[in-house]
Image 1: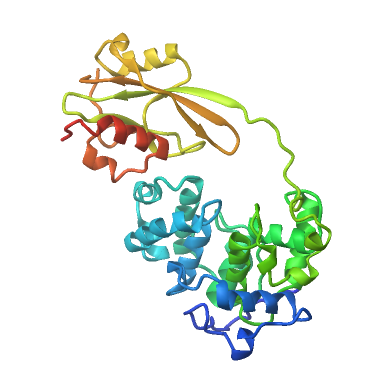
Image 2: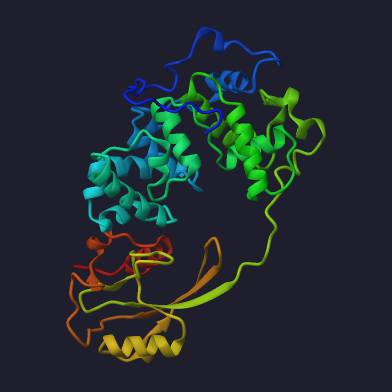
Amino acid sequence: MPGCSWPGKGEQPSKLGSTRQETTPASMSQPSASATFAQRLLAWFDISGRHDLPWQHPRTPYRVWLSEIMLQQTQVRVVIPYFERFVDALPSVRALGQAPLDDVLALWSGLGYYARARNLHKAAQSCIEHHDGELPRDFDALVALPGIGRSTAGAILSQAWGDRFPILDGNVKRVLCRHHGIAGWPGTPAIEKQLWRIAEDLLPDARMADYTQAQMDFGATLCTRHDPACILCPIQDDCIALHDGRVGELPTSKPGKPLPERHAFMLLATDAHGRVMLQRRPPTGIWAALWSLPEADTHDSAREWFESHLDAGYDAGHALDAIAHGFTHYRLTIQPLRWHGVEPRTSVSDNGDLRWVSRDELRSLGIPAPIRTLLDAQLRDTELT
């Protein structure tokens, strides 16, 4: 890759530890406008960056990888408690790969974008099979793993080992588009190619872990999408968007189109013991492999499913308040239907894709956030076994 140094065979990873381990006294002084982009950003980071995130201490390849996946489209404050619970339960690549998928999804439950968790699990299993249970210190090997793209691979290599690789997440794209005055939606191949070239050209020769974190912190806390704090910006002297009065215009927004609407009925049935019937979702698609309520597209198909599986009157149920939930590609309106004290028409296996679940067992299953919220509200006053 142009502008990047690849770790040679037999090279040892740099010492892992604090994000400030490479800081020198000179880097703490206020740089002049003639200082490089990276020097100014690092000086800002030393004073205003985030140095005490849980994945920074210790900063191992596994913890960096996990944090990078969790932070995709999710804010730091939301990720921290999930990260801490996850590494407590699954402290290594090998532990993750050997864990049942249900356990992984349960730890992820509520964080959303569940494909991330499934890809983590698959990637860990691949690392066990091909890399002796560790993440490989190799760019091509990393991007070959499920869920790891070019930017995530760069973030892992630069933060875990100090290797000289760029990143290009949403925050970095925004900063570079403003600083270099680049118009056009950053998601287009031509603009993205231009941004990658700039990101590589701006790389410093040292302190790669800090520089990578500095870029993410700067975009998340100072050069924000709305109301950026330009007066405090360490790179304002040569920011084209600021000089041209175009900060609010850049980066160019993605061309919008209305999201399609979808409606679904979900059947919430409890038996005489207060247990709720759950069904595992298909292995692909939205909420893949999670446990949820049985779902139907229409009243007729909901009735057909109910009468095939449960020994009660379908018309004895009642409708709950509808739930609106947004996905990336469409909006879903869920209409829950509720029944009490029903029994199955045939035996329900606790190991199949359909099962009765008690309140205590709900905590150990991966359940979509809106469904878990619905269950918590409906079962709060029900005594479960």
